[in-house]
Amino acid sequence: MDIDDYIEAHIDPEPDYLSRLDRDTHVSLLNGRMCSGHLQGRLLTMIARMISPMRVLELGTFSGYSALCMAEGMPKGSTLHTIEASDELQDFIEAHLAQAPENIRQKIVCHYAPALEVLPSLGKDFDMVFIDADKREYPDYYRTVLPMVRPGGYILADNTLWDGHVVETGHHHPQTAGVMEFNRIVAADPSVEKVIIPLRDGLTIVRKKDTTETLPQTFK
Image (cartoon, rainbow, N blue to C red; front, side):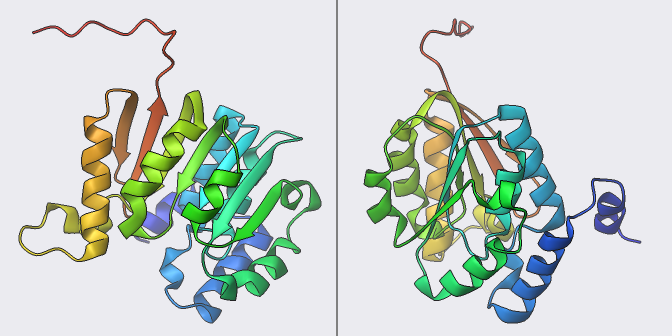
């Protein structure tokens, strides 16, 4: 048993409908490893339970696994808007959403278009945003969604260590460059608190500061 197997054996089990979705994702779709999977999925559910968000935004639906996990942990009456740029995935996504419990799937609203085209129509005051889409667009995603998040709200971004490419020197692929620029912008942004968790391919958690909070003084 390796460490990943050990972890998954000692956390909440993966619901059957998510297990089927994970299997079908790897069998039917290219880049199945993009699926959040058991461990990250349980973390997303736990974070949603902790935050109790009424309005959640996801950039990058892929097969729908992460959306279902977040919706599972969200309160009754909440809404999750998830955006997928590839309309070729729509039939796959909708088929698996239909297999999820009704009280979970009814929270999810799907949009099939490039994220930056959809975002202006969704309004503001989101409690939580999960970014897991085109890595080249990460800096633009951040600049666009930050004003859409309420003070005290959260932004989660996946793949922010990008297979370790972020610490390599020399020429970078555009996706690597996008992740690195995102990390630089977030690190330099005084309006947010931030931490990178080395889970899977890196998960950044950002909290938008509330201007009514008493911020600690900076000591030299």
